[in-house]
Length: 292
Image (tube, rainbow, N blue to C red; front, side, top):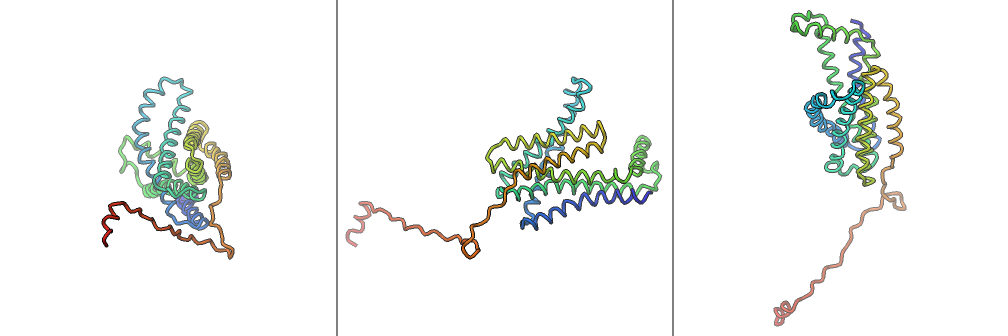
């Protein structure tokens, strides 16, 4: 086993887990918030996948059977890419909207939107990193084993080829998973800020913009990866990251601060005293108290 490839596979999984954790620590300290919003963002991703994954498994075969055969061959791949992109965008952004509306009702500032997005993209990276490390441990365990003793004959050739490809790929290819997550997290943050505009600007069009931006990214990466390979697909994420930065800059608003008093301290909120309510006496009340 090449030790460089051995380390690269391990480092890929560790990076995918470590990057979002480090970012979460940085943001919570910089913004002086607790981890609550980060975890709400993480729950947003998990909830969306609870619906998204079964939905794709149920509907995608119907799309391939009923729609794709009727299309020209050159349109089948773009149609699949658009379908997968729209499915991801609809599920994740609709759930994100619902979380803003009914759960994170206090998240109405740019910083809180950023922290929610960091949790959304962060937990996605962490879960994928765990899967990467799980696969790594399995492949290390069977590296010196005779696969014919643990795999059925009809699967032996396929498994042998997969293992060979895994341990023979260049080290920089092994790190593509971490690179992709490094670009995906800012995208989730930008999408979180876009959906936040539904509530700060009070217009639903921002939800549809977020859905379309999410769908365009996923569809484009899928199409490029199939057509031109992983490096071109990952390279396109650089352009996506630039757009994400523009989104974050355009919608940046500082958090509101309390008005300071002359000595530099926030003005206290004083209780308001209301005058007592005067109850008008009725003729019956006067009659009852006539001889008292």
